Image 1 (spheres, rainbow, N blue to C red):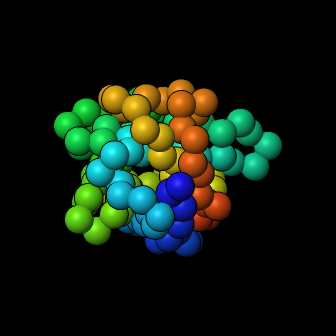
Image 2: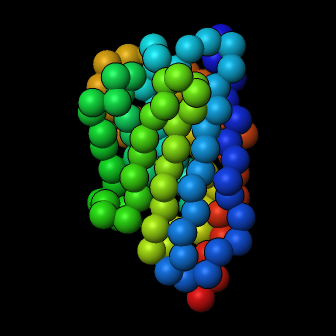
Image 3: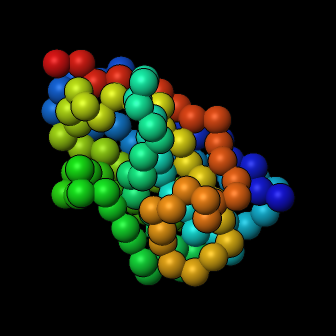
Length: 124
């Protein structure tokens, strides 16, 4: 069973950048698709980005396209979310999730394993 730990969150100014990491243990990330989701206070959890097990297929929410980039380093068992041009509306707890399926999906129910989250706060 894979365990996930997110890191890299923190406070940042409007227009700044952060890189989130999702480190896996207990199994190889090579067999998993990985997604990033976020949840702001009082709002439902929403999809941000996803990457297939092979890293060939990528998917992004419209709200982050062109600003965020997801990548996967199977040798390090880590998935990254590079976030540029951050906006106050990106403020949320960010969660990574993993599942053993083909492709990259925005559907949360496909992901069986979840991390505890890392907080990103963007101030104007």
